[in-house]
Length: 115
Length: 110
Image (cartoon, rainbow over all chains, first blue to last red; front, side):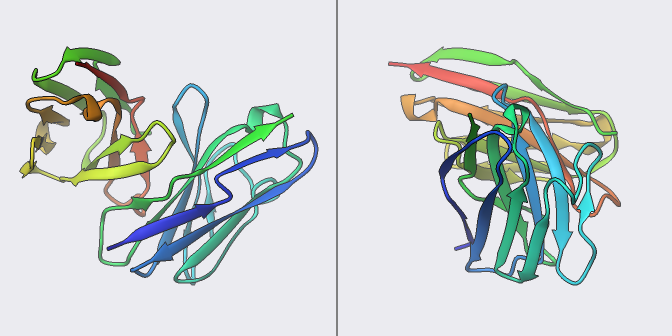
């Protein structure tokens, strides 16, 4: 079946430092990858949508300068949170979709705590 | 942009009772997907249901696209059904972007 793995599962970083999280699709080709952040209040925010061989599209309030994303092939994507501060804490979820398939498969998320 | 409203925000049931979760959305949707989030964070897709009715076990998803609403019915609830259920909507022409509701927290007591 289609699975998405995310790592690390949890991470703590000091305020002002950066951390990188990874997303691996298994059993299907991740043509499109969506990165979301779920706040402690449980609301979801779409950070960016990445499609292989296309430009990465960032949502309002999120920038490449703050959340650079790499999507080099059909099984892997990574995102870095640069210069993390308290407001960046939350659960970062990666959802991947295969071309021709409309539903997303999500990973378990990377929980970021900033101290 | 798309607005997704879920109701109720929370629901407490006794084991064996049925649950009906609602999802209303503001703009024309081409996709409606229901997710269950485990307490640890993992998001599991329950249904991808752009229109009509689908069944899986004790779960039934119904989407009425022209009325901009969907529902998730859980029959004979079990304690293991406890968790948060999210409805997510994808719009036509939005390059498969999903907009999530705020979820329904379901608690099933023994």
